[in-house]
Length: 248
Ligand code: ADP
Ligand code: MG
Ligand code: MG
Image 1 (cartoon, rainbow, N blue to C red):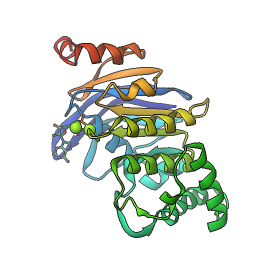
Image 2 (image 1 turned 60 degrees about the vertical axis):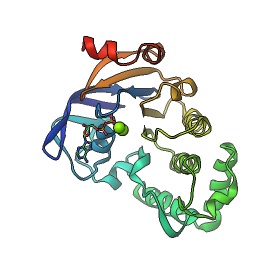
Image 3 (image 1 turned 90 degrees about the vertical axis):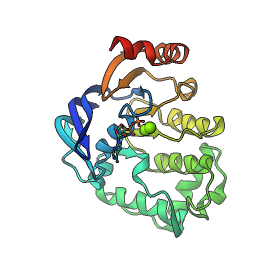
């Protein structure tokens, strides 16, 4: 499970996370919601180990292991998937090559044998069929000329291939249409099971119509100010963050 305790972090000397406490048990999908600028992306970047995001206190462990002390590659090898840690565009790199490289790096780290091109294609096609994805996505350059929805598809395909035990998805893109939201939701829902947990970070309640979370947490001004069941997302949709913000 993921356990975050008293996590504080700053960006460019400014404190953004002001003491985050959060537990995502094994097998559960939790959502973090919050207004713009509340620190949602900062939390996901801190967990991903992105440069420039400095942890100043507290801890984050995954199955008891300190995530924050790990190199980003080690985080992946330990079963963490952070969608945004992958490059946005890689002109000249075929998507199949890119995905196979990512999968083989993970397999090496786990002491498993690497897949050759044929073996990889077989696995990739299986996963793509399960997600109703068109096969030509494998032939294109990584994300080059992909629409927002196609980038999402590719992200979800990466997740389906890497089979993480914990996925952290930061849905930052306000321009995502319903189709793209459904791609994300289908991908997460397909992974759901006793050995998979997810933290879905979103500004919008809409995504949670498709991914019904076990728990919802509201992040405001660098702190989780309220947690509840899936109905909390609906409440927020109806009332906005104002009421919670005023009470917090
Ligand atoms: P959210 O994802 O909830 O919209 P962010 O984590 O992106 O919020 O931002 C939280 C706060 O941190 C904002 O006040 C934002 O201006 C600030 N911030 C985030 N990233 C940076 C950065 N790279 N440099 C300076 N300030 C940043
Ligand atoms: Mg934002
Ligand atoms: Mg954000």
